[in-house]
Length: 265
Ligand SMILES: NC(=O)c1ccc[n+]([C@@H]2O[C@H](COP(=O)([O-])OP(=O)(O)OC[C@H]3O[C@@H](n4cnc5c(N)ncnc54)[C@H](OP(=O)(O)O)[C@@H]3O)[C@@H](O)[C@H]2O)c1
Image (tube, rainbow, N blue to C red; front, side, top):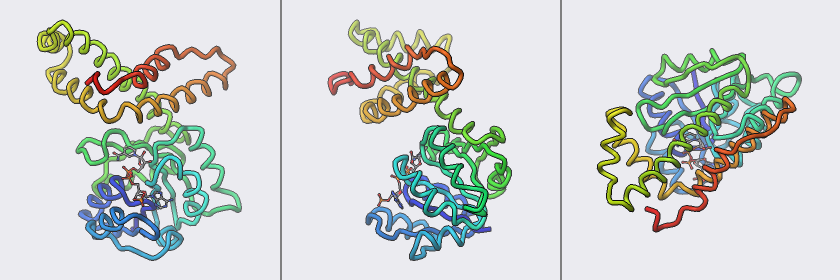
């Protein structure tokens, strides 16, 4: 079996390391990319070819790991050329995922498409790839080759929807933790508060909360943009059913991230 990557950054590097350790043939191209990407691909030991078309045609499983902005074009230009199956792992909305699905099937492409979403940081031990779509089992094979893949359903869009829904929860918690502890700090009670909450939450509450607050210092803008995606998603699912759109909590979380200043950390 051969796995190909379009886009060779953190995701491709981390996943191909595991695949190579499990004797999978991995191929990519770095044509026209940055020095950082070129070096990463060389360091990883994957086979490097001179065009993205070649990567697609050589791959039984073709993975797109570029960026949300380029996902549609990558699927349209290269995904459909895959020798077997194409999976998108970019952080894209279910709407974009469903649009990508329209490029496949019929006379357009003999390749199949699977919706994918990485949960957690790809380099962490417990990160999981959620997949959905009729051909998900063809990606779940990668569980035998060092990856952690979980099938959600046969419906394209479900894996990306879970990722969006998870974002509402995780980013909401991060925003409320920041607000709570900023007030506690002001009263010089933050250590006492951490210990008090840990009594009824989990043992690792203190460690996890501090990590959430610290990471916000560098990720607040990205997180605020990601909440825009979440709000779009919520609007679309309510619109589809002709229901009133109520996302007051997610609006607040977005505005919270947007309003944070340097001195808030
Ligand atoms: N890292 C994570 O833990 C994680 C978790 C969940 C989801 N994701 C998603 O996975 C995707 C990849 O993430 P990453 O962390 O690997 O990003 P990254 O480190 O920034 O790598 C992106 C790679 O794609 C390349 N690229 C960009 N546009 C391209 C194009 N048009 N054609 C070919 N290659 C292109 C970049 O090359 P240059 O260096 O030349 O720009 C770089 O090699 C993103 O959509 C991200 O949202 C990542």
